[in-house]
Length: 318
Image (tube, rainbow, N blue to C red; front, side):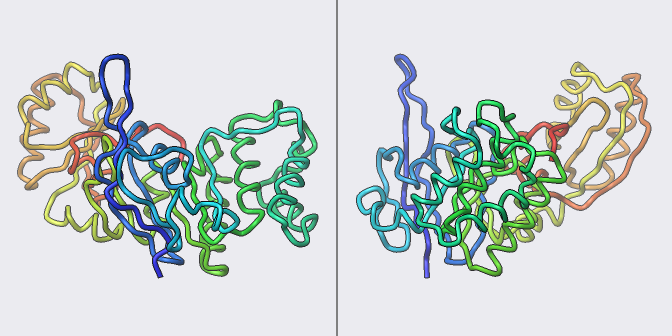
């Protein structure tokens, strides 16, 4: 059975005298019991799409169906079967975390609410903050509370917008493990947005790559990476890589794709022979090459190859 259908959804916003296309002819479906990912950088249209799917804003055109019900027209018929977590959590700031869970638990008519709350407090390691008012929560703590709230009613469709943003790496791993667990054991369908390639790779059965409001590819993580099977991924360590040198590299080796941070240049090549030419070019421009190695392609490489842009800052927390 199809849990979610998105058909030809488009959305445009007015900015002063101009118009910005947020989404353009978005089409995909999510099977019941599937974890489906929307992978794209910040500003690519992911959150706008989530708001349309949940019925918070209307598209300019297109249709959304959840378990066969049209959204937002028939949203009230399935509201108790879905839940959503947005990356920017909203709370009643004068209520404690525990009060929030009690409040929403009663709205969702959760059975064994006290036990469920304790289970979620344990999962998200909220013991030291759960009885404090929400205005004292950090971004990561607010996200944990928001995730706990959304899981209270064990929805048939769980929609997550950047679910691990603001979480430390250890807790992010625990959240990902829990999402896999509830998907496998309870059959909960999950739609999530992320700009963490590792998160999409680990969690999702299929991924839609979205950029500038358009879906440019939909497939399994392995099939997407296989699109670069014939390409060569080379990472070159450079101790004094500068923006000026990067411009020279891009100008001379325009058939290569790149991404770089302060000390590494990652290149997608057509053939290994190009590596020697690039290294010679770096040395001739007084760059200190400290390492060279090849790797298997990642989803980051796929995104770079398809769009010519980075998915995210390489130094972001995972």
